[in-house]
Length: 306
Image (cartoon, rainbow, N blue to C red; front, side):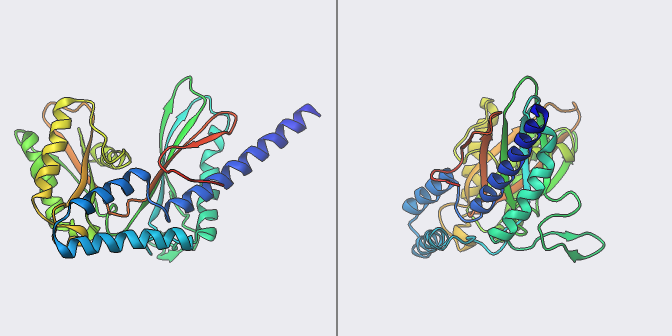
């Protein structure tokens, strides 16, 4: 009898967590993270260009309407991606992949979310936002911990998905990193619906840099790299990119970016891998922490309720 009750408790926990993540995934398509809302308000107040101020006001009205109508604020609700920092002792660690698959299907129906999963080479839309390796799960396992932090991200077709990554030739150094960032943002930044949150990965290869650039845009807008040299580079890149004057939606203005976040790793002595990922002004990401007893705390948004 005790074994049967444990199974029932386990099943209930799986169902409850699937429901929670479905509602949270749908929620972030409709309401921006608190830090992004504050940053957009700050940029709106500082803007002097009349057209840019009107565009910022249109953005604000868009978000108000999405909140009141309980509908996504952008028609492209993106490819769903989950970034997990999971304790090795989290009781549902082995079930998380299936839970997030079910959560994506639930969010697609209840959001509603646009159907954005097309099977490659088959060229058929699955209609559920799920498919081969979709939703994408990125894992970090933390020994001895029993909780999990899940970052939910909607990767849009115009902003994040057209990211870029390369390995610089020896001798290009950090000047080469800055040049690559400027090349990417100046060539395609308008298409990504600025002001952008720019994520830069600096690593040892193209694929590790790309992963870190995506992790970078999951950080809060005003966060700072722990290394002073990297933090200075974040500031200098942001200042330089703002000098481009892209403005909101690329219609000119004071700001091209909300900020620049760098994530880095150790690297091979003769190579620097660099990658850029961009989040659009409607930067739809969310962070939630779930404890071993299935209690939870939303970190990214104020006001989320089941």
